[in-house]
Amino acid sequence: MPNKTTLSVIKADIGGYVGHSAMHPDIIENAKESLAGSKLLIDFYVTSCGDDLELIMTHNLGVDNEKVHKLAWETFEKGTEVAKKLKLYGAGQDLLADAFSGNVKGMGPGVAEMEIIERTSEPILIFMADKTSPGAWNLPLYRIFADPFNTAGLIIDPKLHDGFKFEVLNVYENKSITLSCPEEMYDLLVFLGASNYYMINRIFRKTDNEIAAAASTQKLALIAGEYVGKDDPVLIVRSQSGFPAVGEVLEAFAFPHIVAGWMRGSHQGPLMPTSIKQATPTRFDGPPRVICAGFQLCDGKLVGPRDMFDDVSFDETRRQANQIGDFLRRHGPFEPHRLPLSEMEYTTLPKVMEKLKGRFVEGKKG
Ligand code: F6R
Ligand code: MG
Ligand code: MG
Image (tube, rainbow, N blue to C red):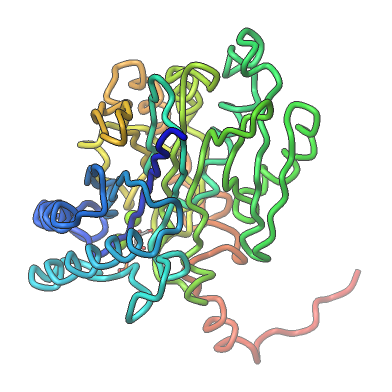
């Protein structure tokens, strides 16, 4: 049996620099030291997207491994100490539990994991976003794995031609359904279009059930029962030789589609693909960012990263995102820029209603 490699991407906001805009370099250094000091991992890479610390790890221990999750949790705890010392903003924000208990899922951090048998060559793309939620992946994932106008391989490559299966999670009811494309495409889109409720969890190649993508679907708001920060998501995508090509995967991000998040987690804005260096959202705490670190896996070693959106071919997408951002900003507190009341992360509505309740009168009929 060939060795299996597990990829674990675990992230948390444990303190912002300055405000919620970026990550302090001392926290990144601290996380590198913490992971380097462990014998569990084959390899790791630490980076940040906005104010989120991103731990990209490889090992042989499988998904949901308690030891690996504990290592990530302890790394976040150590980073929180650094954040507290520097009085960084929102130190320990995503660590919702007092002590680790078996699995970081449900405790605040976001997690995307997959266990694979490495192919002869295994190009992997890790996407990380800030100021948005896992629903932001629905549209690009649909385009990558189901839309031949994006992915030519769905038509041209016999290995892709049968299509992919999408595991979709209703994050409010914690129920999932698997739908197969192309034959159930229209049913699938009923759910994917409601991206604040239904989020793609994993994608499998239909011919052999090989995993193609895995996303984080934690919703901090639901975990904590109240607003505690945006559940900025991560995503792992395999590519080439029977999966969509690197260029087909990235092409799906050339359209800066509108996602929920941005300022106070309560606004709609364009998802802007940037270099890792430019993933520091400052205008109205945004617009929401997505970065992509590309690696070649080599016996579990992470050869890379390449900063995949650090390419002039995404300049027009960024320009368009800025224009869409300008246009939406001019709506100020009006929908559709501001989220509907039901989805607002911070909401003053109950207090305003309480204050004004005696002043509501029956509406005039006719
Ligand atoms: C959005 C986000 C920021 C904050 C905003 C207010 O996900 O993190 O936009 O919501 O900066 O932050 P507080 O309430 O901490 O002052
Ligand atoms: Mg923050
Ligand atoms: Mg964040």
